Length: 494
Image (cartoon, rainbow, N blue to C red; front, side, top):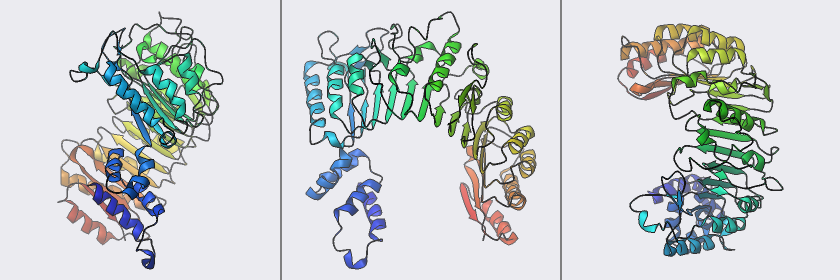
């Protein structure tokens, strides 16, 4: 499999080389092969074993990503970080020293630090009382990975010394923290400068009774360089604010948990001075109250200005809390939980009142598609070039009539995806409707270049592209063939 992947990539590059010079491939070509081929680190390691040349050429890629586990995670509310037995700890330290050596450290661009999760197999490596925890050793070694660009940390505590060593990584651009606590007594000086920050929390057991400190991640991060934020919480619960909440920010424990979480989300969004991309992933837990989540009492809708925001992905409820400017170009609206589809009423309100009318790309996930929703999109977003609609259900005939007359005039790409068909709608009938939609859209919207129409649950769909000339005979011939084909059918009119 690895050799086949290399051969495919090499053939593409080989075709670009002059035939008279194909006898020997220069190292630059092989480096491009390793960079372009769809190979993971394990594949690269195996390829390096085949010959000396590959061992040298694949070295940079093989050592570009480092994974380290400094402790064992146990389901315990308080003492949940268990150290390793001495033998395993010694081997881990030796491996850490190897990766931090002068020969390897300059090659490391990505580092992931996470625990080993407790199991019967891992239990033999644990020593709850007299073992060695490698967290401090890891942070002491971290500054030696001076070319590190991307750091992922899971369930790590950050004390004063750890933050100080983290700030020594001058080339660090992306920091991902999952359930990481901040135990430092004071923020580092100078503050940590990163462009991308990911906050996530999914665990409600480990450290559930830990006390919060006076310093949080917003005290650690410098606001000016931040351009991208991603927030992902399992549920709107205080336990998922690890490292974000402090004794100062979480002073009113009598308030509802949703309100406290909303207050901290507002704090996160207001921290950067020039945020460009914002992603808020849906809550994993489903509750009816989620649809009616509100901002804190002391915050009014649209009071926070994110004038530099270019892209937003997440529930419409959070976007309604802020005001955006003309730089906003792409919006993807999803449900507040993992039900996948948003209530059309909530979505309609957000489209009419909160989203900047300057956007060019809009993607919505909605339960149904009422006429009022498409009419609001057409009336407000006159500059839209790409519209993607994912719906759980719809009246197919009503949808076709609405789409044909309620799209922005300059639309270039339309994608309609339904989860399932109306029970009275047969497969053959839907295919005819799909072709009716296609021919009508290309006739009504001169700028339209592409139409996609799919039924996800039945794995059936069409992907049409407009050429300079559309012929009726081609449409009819395509319809006759399509009745017997299952899957995505790509048709380009000629």
